[in-house]
Image 1 (cartoon, rainbow, N blue to C red):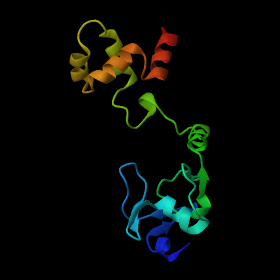
Image 2: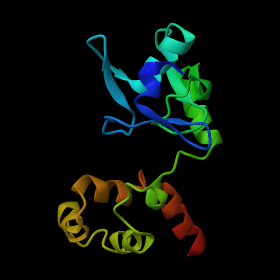
Image 3: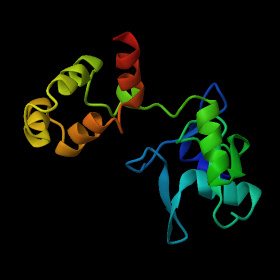
Length: 153
């Protein structure tokens, strides 16, 4: 590990070197190195393993966005990165996502309200956007939850 990263990260029991300083809103470490802003995992890969190929992602085998351990990093296409996420079941959607604002019970209630008022008014009731309500009514979001409701009924 290069001193730049040793001084700014903490070695974990699982081998991750977790970046201790700034991070982006998406949870990746960020830094300025030689007057350029970098995601820390990309900089670590470049400094330890060489050039970043155009259009390639730097992926984490450890799934720790703050890890800068070059042994945990590999270069892959966007498709490789997506496949890795799916294989590790990190592509969580619907109510299982920590971003979800709705529960299964609320989705049932929203479906029951279809046709009784505008999507905007229903959205106000559940503190979500009109677009979210419209997507639920169309079946284009919360697909797994909607499928489970169909299978139960």
